[in-house]
Image (tube, rainbow, N blue to C red; front, side, top):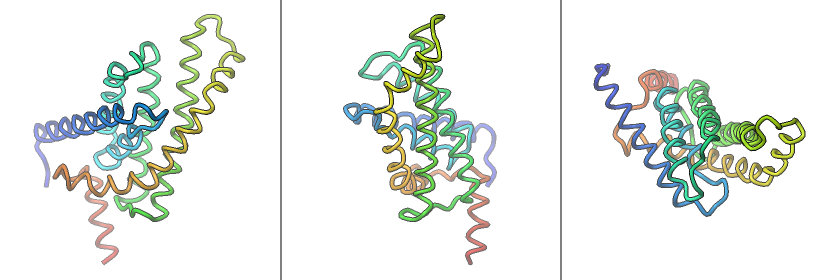
Length: 204
């Protein structure tokens, strides 16, 4: 079924609002756990199911909202680096949907692949945001040594972030990919739905 442009726009806005609200709410609930958030996983899932544009919108809206709603204070000048890093998860989710053709099975190698992708994204996100932090903190006096020191100081948090993203990607993401379209009663991105149809025909 082809959706009119206005319906497509309203549909996308509803998806972005639902994902962003869930992300900010879950971030508040998990605030006491360092670097353990559903944000990365849900951005990945949004792009996997509904395309890069929706996933990128979820990433930007969620990070901007969290930069003000965080109990640790306003993120400030580092916010653009946070948004840029989160867009990587949207790109990864979109790319993964092409690899799997819309089929992800919980408890299989598919989940471990997604977990590995999210862990890699977390590593790059941490490197990029730490560089941004160093640039903001030191300004014109920034040096390579200061950037490296900032990276080293953030190492324990990086490891926790990468491990949590791997576990959430391996075990949580496949379940959400299956459940979200049913709960929201929305079909995935039309191209992804077509790929799923071809997959079912080949299996049959």
